[in-house]
Length: 304
Ligand SMILES: [Zn+2]
Image (cartoon, rainbow, N blue to C red; front, side, top):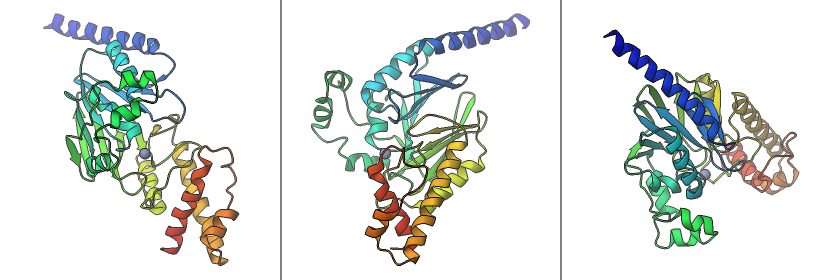
């Protein structure tokens, strides 16, 4: 019996050493945020893909900006583990988060909020010629898209779900009206990591479609802050601390205040778009999206 336990202990020591060594081999595009948890992005503001290792297999949070990135992830996984990807959790159904799913599923099971499949189909991700069109952009993409097919999420949950994989627990929360038709925040209570989806960004304006609600976004931020996370991993942008949530909350509050004041002065939406400047956002990426952020605030302020 004693030798059996010693064996286990040695195996654990060996496995953690292997993971440490491998982490360094993954290269600068992978950031280790906790033991066995690695965030990958090729270039700043492309979507983050996170590898979560467990003793029962791998969980991926999204599958990369494009299938080119998914191949990089697949190669990294080979260095990290010989266990398969068990689940892919979508933070949102847009193409810059999901196109690489086909490399892992099956056997991986794709989990997303209700509405994800409809959104993917609506965007034509399963349309004939989609892969040809997208892969025509470069030779590297052409290779990466080989074998492409849209993977419709096998599980579409509603509102809340807990996924237990190996020693880890992942809590999924639907974020309503923050960015896409099906946004999911993921909370790892033991590791104190929250994945915010595209509800928050880092020095970058979100693209606010007509259904996006700033009051709903502010409640999503409040909910995630209430979890008391140590690590915050946005859908796009460098992982950081709760400061990411604080800064986004401050931005939306300032935006709402600014729009409210101008509405009170009788200004039209067009006039507000011309006039409103928010200190501290001058160097943000996606300045062309600021007008649709103002529109979202205007809708919230006026009810129109
Ligand atoms: Zn998106």
